Every structure is written in structure tokens, then in C-alpha cells.
Image (cartoon, rainbow, N blue to C red):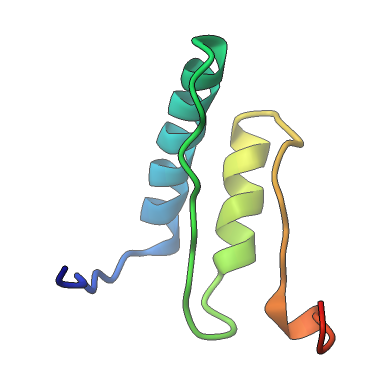
Length: 75
């Protein structure tokens, strides 16, 4: 499988996340498993901010924050 590298602006990622979160809510209502969302990138490119923005725009507090920089060996 070939990896595709795509560069997006933070606002574009927020829009995509909002769409995906809404779709996951609909999947859950139909007893389907939601789609996992993974955001990767260098430090300081607004990964956490776009997730927070999407959740605030959707007025939800349901998000998982995992900051690898804060993890200890063995976590």
C-alpha cells in the first residue's frame, strides 16, 4: 500500500475532523464501531489545537488527548 502525504491547513483539518466525528456518532447510533482517527506530525503544528477546535465547534467534550511528549518509558 502506498502512503499519501497531504499537507493541510489547521482549519481544513478541523473541518475534516468535525465531519468524521459526526459520522462516528451516526455509526454508534446504528451499533457500528466508529472509525479511529490518527493525526501525526512534527511538534508544534497544531495537532492538539485542531482537535480542541473541532470539539468546541461541535460543543462536545468527548475527545481523547494523547501527547507522546508527555509519556514515560513503559506507558
